[in-house]
Image (cartoon, rainbow, N blue to C red; front, side, top):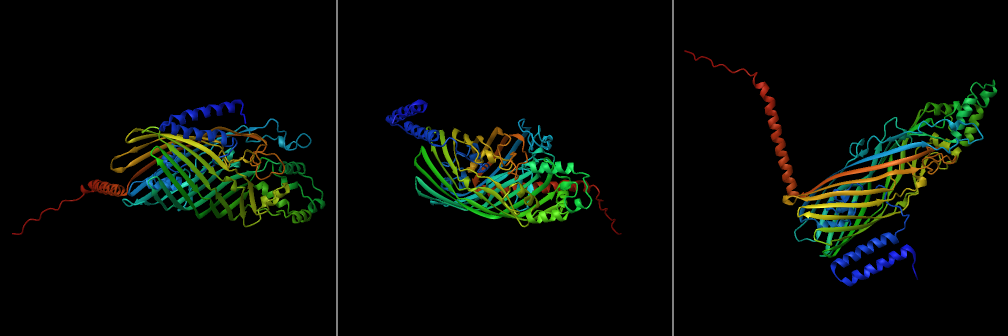
Length: 609
């Protein structure tokens, strides 16, 4: 078979390079051959349109952040529990304590512009209610802060933080290493101000899975091979708040008919059939109809990780990790709060015998209620993942890393929130083609499986100082035709830098800084049925129908970590407690001094004669 064109030329050049390297027979040739094969596999064998990561492992450890998650072949300390449990065998003997802290910052900016080709909800043949300018058009806004759920306090915090802590134990000369740690493998959230134009997509959102205890074990089978396993006990939490509107032809028609029938009174007949104004005046296409609040969580959603670490040569290491699927059964509450206009329309539907009969036939609401609240259930799944990587050391100071990541995001087909009562909004939107029922708020997702690569390097500048950097391309697993403000992660470039410092007494410090960014994700009008479709049969949920939307995404990560022998940690804590005791004692003495001046000296009594 003959291969022609540019691809054939590249293959011929690659063949010659491999032949020359192989004939060289030295170590440099071998590691170059390995890297060449790895990049060849990436460039020619991976599908060009493959989708990749969503929200996984963004803020786990400073080393992984600085190396863009390219750490499978050299896992980062105790966080090997997540990246590759077999890497625990590389920790120091005895008891080792580790503490980390990561601060993510999300900056998500949305810009909204009217589509010049959009002629209104009735086109050119009917009433031009759709020509009323959308107040969102021509505006933009950025989220005001991040948001996260605090498990013990059962409350939210308007900032994103990801703490980690852990302890490992290995007896001198033993092949077994035991460890336990906590960390956050999945997480994200943001807030918008109360008057933000983004509130129809998301006003408040958080989704996180925190592993509060993950016991792990590794076993050094031979000097070159180690196996490991960890089991995680985690909590999953989800919260959402948004202002709801429905730019739709049927909704616009209710306002047109409401305006047209004001004062249209036929004695007796109107009261028996269609009292004016029809639909109680109707609801405009850009009017807010409700506010939705929901908070759900699962306090025990387990998982497990398996890992292998193979080091046949000192200059080459292979790592493989499998992370199991996580399934969380969420329970919590919801609250739909309806606008005055919506309540007038619901009251109108029960205002005459004819309307009551029609409502009974189609199971439509006929009473005005200010809100509906109750219990909510849902299922949230996180995918099984497979990650493999190599480390090649061409010189004593330089390490090169290359990883492949796969995740089965296709297990998420839809979001399905199940309520304990019929919801008026869902009862009404079935007239527009919604088939989810009266008690199921269903949003189609159809995520795709993920496959991507990352690369990094570490340079040992000094015996106690290592410099790191990495790059990862994360094409989103969210399809363009289902993109929205809730599944807000587009294609991202992930660039990381950092350093590792070794201090006396076995103390190690790590710092990592990364930026995940996409300066422009465009969602043209009618391109997403979860955001801006004007199709009559997609009422749930397209709050920006008729608008061109552009999203700018920047996610910053700053992370610190320290690892030390456990006895050094205890001594450090004792030293801090001693310093605190001295500071408190000194403060008490300072507070006493002003009062000592008021003490009267005791006068000596004269001796009796």
